[in-house]
Image (cartoon, rainbow over all chains, first blue to last red; front, side):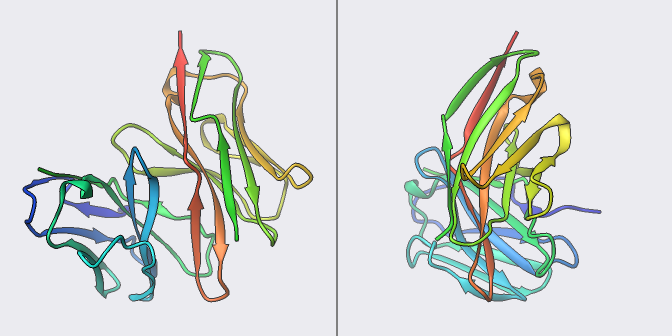
Length: 114
Length: 115
């Protein structure tokens, strides 16, 4: 079975540009999580969805960040405009509601904002 | 609120030596606890989990962890370290709000294995 798929794997952009990160969860999973990992702050939960509905976005740093899940097999995390402090690795994870609670992580997108 | 604390951001052991990575939890309800491993430039991978069944949990790659309620601990161990165990390890606790469930991760422990 394919795991969680994220694209792109690497993104280099200039300050002020829009960045869109994409995630395809494991088929049959109905919860999706976006995390950010930095040396300074560790692993932070940004937002998560149950059945395509955002449940908790309290971790989203500011209005420049937005996330959508238009269907069960696709989610995006958008940063507009991007800033150098957004440089991090962004992970997507998924699991099945009512299941084992195990979250399965994608390989991450390494973002560098110049 | 549920939380975890990992003691020691870096641990170094010799190949063949015992690995012990410490995790203490805080939870007002019986916790679900997890250990994840992250190899360089990869996502997190589940090592093992405790979900209120057996207190000694065995995971992949020879790792195990013991849930000790009296000590509020869930330490990760492996009898004999291998070079391939060098990675970052994260302890996590499930936070359940009644309608949704999420994980809260510790700050991680980087394991170095030397010859």
